[in-house]
Structure formats: C-alpha cells, structure tokens
Length: 225
Image (cartoon, rainbow, N blue to C red; front, side):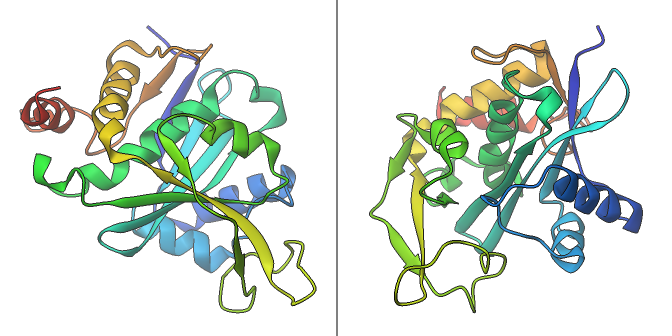
C-alpha cells in the first residue's frame, strides 16, 4: 500500500542540507529557531534531522530535529509543515518519531526509560506548537528568559526590557514513553494513528526491522507494554 507520506532521516550530504534550508526559508516562521547551513549539516551528520516527504510528488512536506547536549538531555525543534500539508496530523507523526529517537540510539534497553530529559522550547506566542504539546504527556515549566547571544537561533525572538527572550519549556513525561513507542510501531506497521488524517510510513534505521531484529518491539516487550 502506498502511503501519503514517508518519514526518513535526512541524508548526510550537501544536497539535503540545501534542500532543508530552502524549505525552512520557503516556509518562514518567526517562531522557529533559525538554523545555519552548518547547524543543519551537523544535525544530519548525527542522524538527528527527520524529513516527511509526500509520496505523491516526492516534495519535502515537513521537518523536525532532536538535539542533544548530553546523552540524557534532548531538545526537540524545527517542527515545520508546509502550508499545503497542514491539518493532516503530519506534525504529530513527526513528533512521535522525535520522541522515540533518544530511546533507540543504542540497542533497545528498558533501563534507559526514565533517564532522559526531553523538552521543547516554544515562543509564548507560537500557538501552533503550543497546541501540539498541549497534551498530558508534556509538562509545562515556568517561563524562562534566555540570553540570545549564547543560544543559537533565537536572536530574532522578542526580548524583554533586559534584552532576554522569553520562552516556554514543555518536558516530556517519560511514563508515556511506552505509549509513544506503540504509536511509532502503529505508524510503521499500519501507517495510521488516531489524530493523523493521512497515512504515514516510517523508513528510519533503528525503527524498522533489520538483521532479524525489531528494536521497537523488543523495547516494548522489555517494558511489558
């Protein structure tokens, strides 16, 4: 069955970097961090940038990335869907893939569940992203005020009188990790998920069955979920 979209990891080449940068410039959003080509190149090299492509014409329809400062601390960003593909649930499907990413970086192990800090930083006026994380699985934290100088990509964010940029942080509650792993499995195997109106395939190393192993199912079995 041909599905409406396929989510893949961005290739590690200059053509992919240029395509991602062109997409983000063509779908401008003052709400997103602004990534340089070097930022995108580093994230693709690390295998942390995901793309959603339309299976109709192969066009890039959406993006998301995960960035890690330490093995236990992850940030989700770059959630963007082209205007022609919105209201399809594609952003939610991308979020599912981003959430399960930290758990499947190494061999699946239930010991890693409960040891991650996964968060999304959101501009207070970014209503679309706030709706995406307005779920029981995400815990809102008090508003932070960041210095735009050391924090990449937020120089264009509004600032207060002290020159700091207000942001909201939403932290993933890891007790819902099994739920997101099951959702990733449902997308991968059936292409459907409640709230996602289109069919989505997942073709991502670490999420698909390879070499006789199925890391998603193995981790769910370890968790008894």
